[in-house]
Picture (cartoon, rainbow, N blue to C red):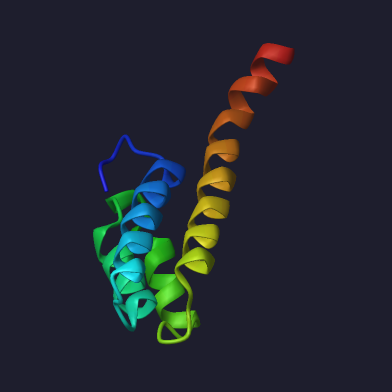
Length: 91
């Protein structure tokens, strides 16, 4: 994942590739793709990747579930980063 990419853009690409693979009869795709996603995350997501690996059973995790967790984290991180600027502008 490139540093400038958003999780939404990254997830869209992953889901398209995953759907193509499923149509071609790939088995056990979710487990492999979940692992691949966690290994390919940008450095700024390292900490959330570690938390997910330690707290979830990756063998049972679906791709959509992982991408949802990453998107929620990205939204929270983005919002926290913007709040101080918005507070200063409102003053």
